[in-house]
Length: 142
Image (cartoon, rainbow, N blue to C red; front, side, top):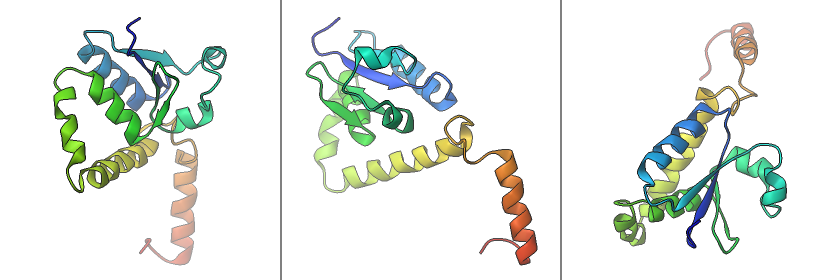
């Protein structure tokens, strides 16, 4: 295990998480990123990680035990991938963090609709009840 290895946590039941994990695995030829499935027993290996939050958003942990969530985790992943590491200077440009943070939040929001596991509160029965309430009010949402 390389000294600078980053542990990236992923939900094996989330299609978006699995695609991102596979994308990272294809590009991480040097083994700088460890891919850790959010499954039983992982809490014992990483007691300092809040696994409820890790299931909600992208979470990574470095060799020193620092925890990164959301956009910060994505930046840490990019720093360890060949090609993307050379682009890290872009984050220092004015406004880039705001824009990339907005893109991350949008993808995270859309993920809730794309993945049944991530968007458990938005099931087909909820969709039906929302439509039913709208029809009772007399039309579409404005």
